[in-house]
Length: 376
Image (cartoon, rainbow, N blue to C red; front, side, top):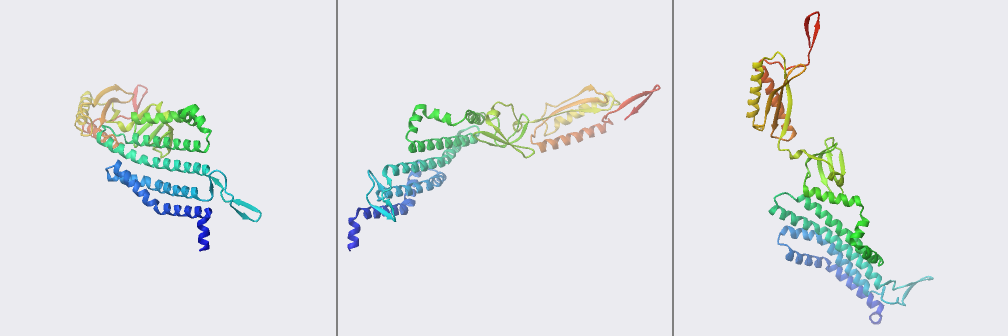
């Protein structure tokens, strides 16, 4: 009884026991409190079950830490280890070393608690960008005429970057009070420009223009100068292209914004152009019949665009009569394009064989003592 009386009369023990009880209550209740808050927010903001799940996943851990550190802060605030104006006279004596019990001021504790809360709120807002991305993606699918998924994803990254930047600046202002005067003088925009280099800003805005203008999207086959390959990603600073030799090329967005872009994936058809050389021994009748048959074949082919094929006797070559052939293949993927070219070429050989026309190859004619000797 004397011990109990001593404890309840001593302010040191009263504050210590109270701090332990507060911390215990918050540790036990933090999961329940976080679930209740998230459930309340989900009912107000969202009607879709899937968004409720995403909201819970985004906020569960930040809210757990929020209640945990709030409990620690409140426990320390009423504990004997915190002083409000002057440190307590009570102390521990270890040998010749005297350690005061009240070692941290309330102002210092509040400052570090504020830093932790800013960090947790920044973390929660950062994770909530998943909600923004999903909401706008769903809206885009319902009303937009074109796919803006990549642009929405890019904007979500920018919002995350801004969120982290503001969070870091608020933490610095809290830890370094004089920093607020500097930021007030130059403005938040000026501070951001001072932190981010000119090239980085140019790359970010170029990336936004690329996503709005849509010269290419992820998965397209593009050619940028000497670089040719498949687009793998478009980020803040750069675009990643996987070349056909499987090398990964990272190009700054500002460079792409000033370059000529050839998007081969946007082809609606592929042109084929070449000369078919037949031997000089071919007669005029054979040549005309051959041209007519080739035209008819190309016009009736299901994978070749109709009314755009051109077949004509173009010129007299060094060793052949050249028939120029131009047509457009409707299938743009390379395997199908190559297969159709093969079928057409085999048919051209068959047409020439049916008319007894020889396909020319390089020859020379030598004049020796008035006799013509043909050397092949």
